[in-house]
Amino acid sequence: MSAPVEGGATQPGATDGAEVDPPRAGPAARRPAVHERPGAVAAYFGYRALAALLLATPLSVLAAEVAGGYPDGEAVLFAPGGLMLVEVQRLAEVAAAAIAAQLGVGALLAAALGLIPLAALLVALSRGGPLSAPDVGARVARALGPLALLWGVALAAEVAAAALVLMPGVSVCAQLAVAPRTRDLAAAGVAAAALVPVAAIGLLHDVARAAVVGEQRGFYDAVARALAALRAAPLAAAWAYAWRGTLTLAAFAGAAWGVHVAGVTSGPRVAAAFGAHLAALAVAAALRASWLAAALRLLDRAPPCVAQEGEPPADATSSGRADAGA
Image (tube, rainbow, N blue to C red; front, top):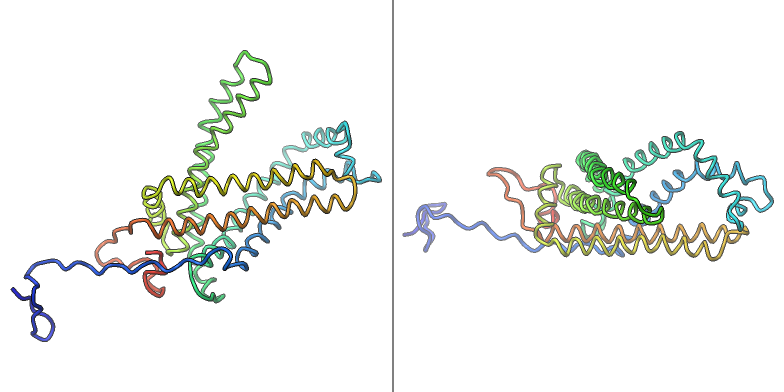
């Protein structure tokens, strides 16, 4: 039986009451590679380097107060025997509460303000073609609310997950009738175990961030999209997150080891040490951008969320569903 169509004509082969399959979504637009967005990556690195420098300032001032009057300056902290380094540690313990409060507030403020360059980086990695400042600014502004809510919820969840592992684990380690070295190793194992749930929450958090910015979704929709993406490819997501995190740790460990071997007993060596840490921070920023690009690709491969009847698709103002990663 033929079904009537507009203008009184009929469409052969269509039956009354039969549901017509919705049109298939086209292939997702190609996401820009990290090397195609050097400006966004450089801006993200610049913010992280500035934040790290500001957070390290209180400890640097404390060290300068102790060792600044010596001819070799702060190089005396790394002299054989470590006498002055121990003295700085003793003074730091006296001022631990004030320094911890200052660093804690500073770290929270830096993380909150860091949502802006993070969102700009995600916008750059999620949209192909040339970028315009008004478009990037508008997308960042729309994403800041859900990003801030995600950050607060994830931070609380990470603290709770770490506490659930650390508190009973450290208590058990303190009661072990073993040598102090063995007790310290056991405590280190507990700390490593606490990193597992924290990393899992961080993984979900980052994929949800990619959904918030790349697909312009709200808090609940972004979490649902992140869960769907992780369920669709759990091993790929874990591997992409793990190897980049391992390389980041290796970069910082290599910089610290190089400084330890070369020493900082002269001005040029101090400058070289500073450059080595900046290089490690640049590697970390590039790996972070690479992981965020991988998170966007995970969303592209995930099954789309089923929208309610009459609900407009996410990012309806963008040019097609492809920009939203469908």
